[in-house]
Length: 305
Image 1 (cartoon, one colour):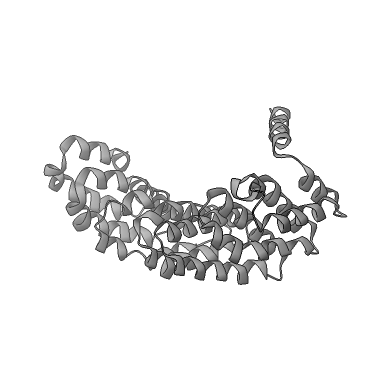
Image 2: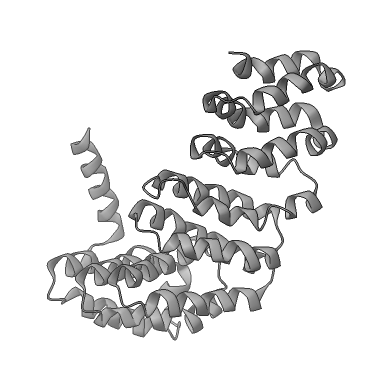
């Protein structure tokens, strides 16, 4: 109860009286019972807001670092609010955590997939705290590791992280970093020997178009040919996602609806080929009009409730 109430007490006393609580907090942070440490880990970001950057750097950062190396039950507390804590630190202090972020991939129990899912979710937020070069050198590699996770939920959220990283590069005019990453994605996913990797490539391309995070001339040159080549993939699940990407997202964009677009013909040819696909699901999604799709989504939702 004491650990649970601590941020409230600190708020009441104010940062000028933190010295009255500091020893108690440090004692609780090293308590033998992990549940006490876990409670503090879940609220350390709240305390940081109350104390401000100087006291946080001096008194909370060492405790935060201890929690990072603790049991998974404690680490999840700091992980869930990692962005909230890091954004309160000075830039130089924050950079010290770049290397440590990859340690979150390693857990006491590899079956603890929600831990890795949470990491991917936090990284999407954390991207704004670091410059594009740091994202390229540190966070990009964590994202690619998470994209290869055994658990599909972790992989799907990680593909969204990949799209967010591309957005980071291109919104900061770091086209070279963006192109490097695109080439890595083509090698890793489009040419993956496992069909789930090739399916991921279609999903990532769909996300890129949907978010508009890559300049369209870069997309049509460096991603579109690889995406369209999935039309001849031997696995129907890959072709289904390609059909969805083209019909639901790509052809809905004004750029691709423009009759004078030199890339429109090859996209439409691919859609026509998918419409006569031997697999029913592929031909269904390649034929389905987006308006009707929305009605279908509503119908499915109504059936579920």
